[in-house]
Amino acid sequence: MRRVEWSVFGWNLALLSGIGFVFSLLLTIFWTKTGTAWGLLDLPRERRVHSSPRPYTGGLAIFTSFSLTLFLTGGYSFPYLGTILGGGLIIFLLGLVDDKYDLSSGRKLLIQILVATLIAASGIHIAYLTNPFGEMVALGWLSYPLTILWLVTTINIINLIDGLDGLAAGVSAIAGVSLLIIGLSLRQSAAVFLCAILIGVLLGFLPFNFYPARVFMGNSGAYFLGYLLGVISVMGALKLPTVLALAIPVFAMGIPFLDTLWAVWRRWRSGEQLMQGDRYHIHHLLLTSGLGTKKTVLVLYGLSFLSGLASIFLSRVT
Image (tube, rainbow, N blue to C red; front, side, top):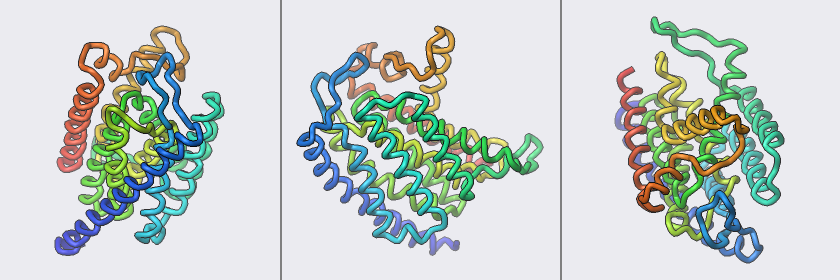
């Protein structure tokens, strides 16, 4: 597109985010009250840092406000967006059921793989990578398992850092901004469209989720956010014709990826199950150092911002 067209598109993006923001504000209030009335509460437990029950219906607010904004703004006209939202619905429902009934890791992983397979089979997949000599190499059938692995990973990394008030939502919003800027430079209109809505929805949710939180996003919200960021990155940042293409979305979601690598390494070293929860995540370590919840979250926001800048820089350099 010409510069003028993208300038107009920029105003449309602001409107998209604004609509998502308003829907999110209103629906978060609604689902917070509904969750409390229905007894959908996250009770204090050993690995939790909150001391009183809180509704875990924030994921409902995120999903419904995102979906409404997408439909009311004509997002269904983009190729693949119906498939993306359908897969997102399954992932969201998986998290919602898990919040209520605490599903086994195996069942959750199986459903995540099936959804990721659906997305890859629909045409949203990592079709090629670039070798160190700058040549684009078609992945062929390998594109499908690589895409599935990527999506299953991103679905879970946001859930792993969702341990403090406002942390997962804020970090996801920062990642969304990074992917939006990268998508603009690549003229990836569908990825940019999704990012704009996602950012607005998360900004509308954060006033209720930041410390002290009145509502939690639950696994339903965390899984859905990870899924969306994973799909958006496949549509946008991973399309860059550069050997660093894979590093760009990893940096955009730097803190979640770093925390996941740290969790995998320490559990492997100690012989624990990889899916076994603990209180040694990065945010837990900062919290126990004496920073407090709010400062810990703000520090991780800052690190996410720097990591996001690095991803944008890499995309421009290449």
